Amino acid sequence: MPWWRQPDCPVRPVERDWIERSMDWLLAEFGTDRLHAEVVLPTDDYFPGAYRGTREDVQAVLVRLCAHMKIDPARVDLEHDETDDRPELSAHVPIHMAGTGAAGHHRVRDGRSVIGIRDDQAARPMALVATLAHELGHVLLLADGRISAQQQDHEPLTDLLTIFFGLGIFSANAAFDYSREARGAYDYTHTSRLGYLTEPMYGYGLARYAWLRGEPDPEWARHLDTNPRTFLKRGLRYLASTRRTT
Image (cartoon, rainbow, N blue to C red; front, top):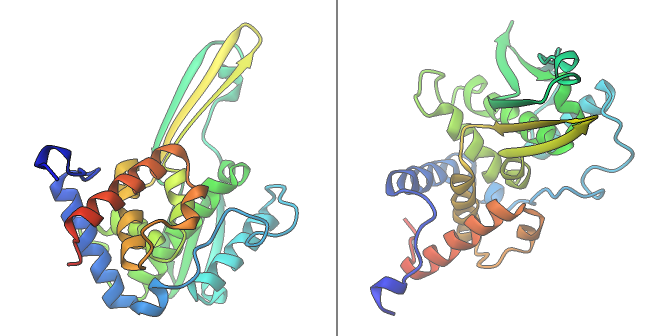
């Protein structure tokens, strides 16, 4: 194949190398059984029953994720943070709101992990699972002493851990959100970026994950939104063309 037709990597070389190196570290740390464990899908099989967004529902999702990630829920305390917005303003003027970063937090208190979740996340199940998975990732990495909070890349590494633990569909789909709502004569728009990886980085992280699992065309990819699924496919084509195994 001519060089100008070879598949390209969806991320920059520095991001590609970090993702591959970090994924290899996660494999060495958590093992092949975890690598080949079940991929969690946004279906009733994994999250059965009616979901109303109550705090009890959030607690139930947390317990289910703890079971999947093999974390004792008794060592985790869940706190709820109030939403910081101004709906009374947006009801009267056209407004665009943008958000970025994490929608939760993790800290250790008296030897226990405390996870805080914003109340508005409960209304968005995909983002809720992504946020809880990220914060539980802190339990495995920080609270369990695998890495230090001073490690410069500990937040993006925690996002990558959600992929390695089979929860990457939620993290990737929640990475960017755009919504628009008409209120009378005005439009209300909201964009948000959740997490510390870009959509291309999620796509290549998922591609590397699938490649290590021996899945050149993973069935679970159909649950991804258009952007991360596109980057995943590009990443898999790139990996197939280069046979990058290390």
